[in-house]
Figure (cartoon, one colour):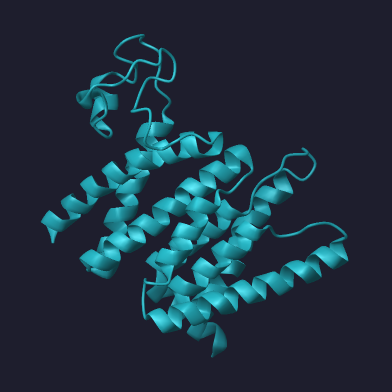
Length: 244
């Protein structure tokens, strides 16, 4: 098992490095393939040993090998977060297939959260990929049923809230994330995760209410989904206790 944990940790670092490419290039409409990895300051292409996830950052002292410009801490932080995600999904599932699949889904949601927070946009290429993969996270027919249920429910909620609030509420991307939550968690845990996301978001929204700052909801939906999934057994017990 420990060998697989190490393997998933490495996979997470590698995929985290790819996430950084997605986060940086997709909002700018750039190709994620060409040009090859390069310094954002001096534009010089990186050698292979400049591009080893996490270790290159540490070895280079957090600076470009050529121009000595500081490298954003986002790069190692995303790679470490991705590694943690992959390890935790494997420990949770004890399955190579499910561990990798869910690791990729949560990583894509992490990238979406950062892009949404930074650019206030959610690329369909990432959200729809995560949605498609989520259908295969369990029983396909059941996951698809729950996906459609949550997508439909959130769409109706969007119409009602927008009507009474007299302004657009809940974006299309929020509906997609809700559908992913339904596919992965099922109905009971899915509804709980959406409620939990509101609980997580409430203090933040109250804090920035008078500061005229826009805070996207997707990061809270993503965090809630991850927490409820990892601790699903404990949350199922909590829900049973509430019903009783």
